[in-house]
Length: 432
Image (cartoon, rainbow, N blue to C red; front, side, top):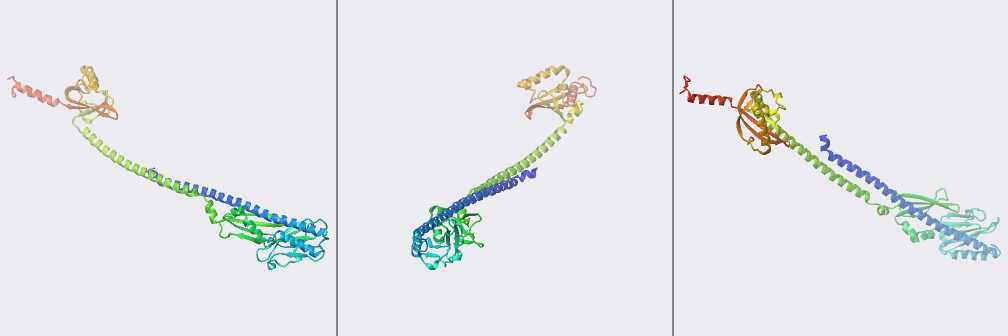
């Protein structure tokens, strides 16, 4: 138990460290969940924006294809090459820089193709690369050109069996610039590393990257959307700057404050333990000193020649030394509980009792603190002349009396002998 009390400060320190670390880990876990939820939220919004922009291009290309086909049909169909090319050029002019190539592929006949801008950036057109699709169907494909790729929208604008296929190749670089240029998208991109993949091929093709996923933290997110038969996969990760921005310092503060508080409590417990140890040592030393003094006092009382009695306030004897037993004939065990009146001659007990009551009340008889000569009664009934000194003291909050009696038998006998010799001849014993 003493060892536990002495080392309790160490237990408090360890417990506070354990609790602080537990709170630190728990709050850190909550902080990580908050960061991940923020990454998830930004990524979902970004995925929605990308899907909306690609959908807008898909809808615009489909609308232009329908318009182009309607124009050609109103001018006698696609047999008129000049009119058909004018319509295709109109499609390119409607979205300059975005649609880099447009074409019409009839069921029979030569395809009509029109390109815009630098022709070297547009890969060579191959009819076999245009898939067969049902009437009224729209399809998205990716055409690689060594730079950023082209997003090809293929559409059949009519429902008859011999409907031509109209396609438009949209520049991915321009499309990506539109995505990155939106103000709300820029806010979402802040702090995120992004990669958009086209999964229409077995290997998958990366359309664009923003930031480095390898240098990003462990907070990742994956999402995809499907458009016109093609799937786009978006992968995002939080950058170290975003993690620092979103990270709360609460776990570190809780850990620091917990350790400081635990250290203070441990120091307080250590000081109290040390103080308690010193106090116990001092108590032990004083107890030993008091015990030594008590033994000395007991030895003085036990070996005193005078009879010493200790009573309570009403005269019941509580302790008597061996000299008292020898003088009055009582055994040591007989003293306990005896009234001091047993030592007073019977004819004086009533008067003595009144005197003691009055003396204890107001000291009117001068008994306490003054030496007197009286006759006391022994156990066998004989009377013995004694000098008596009564003192009062307080112990344990109670009043006590100490009575010291000295046997005057020899002195009285000697005095009587001297008195006799003063009036009688020493040899004859006759009066002078």
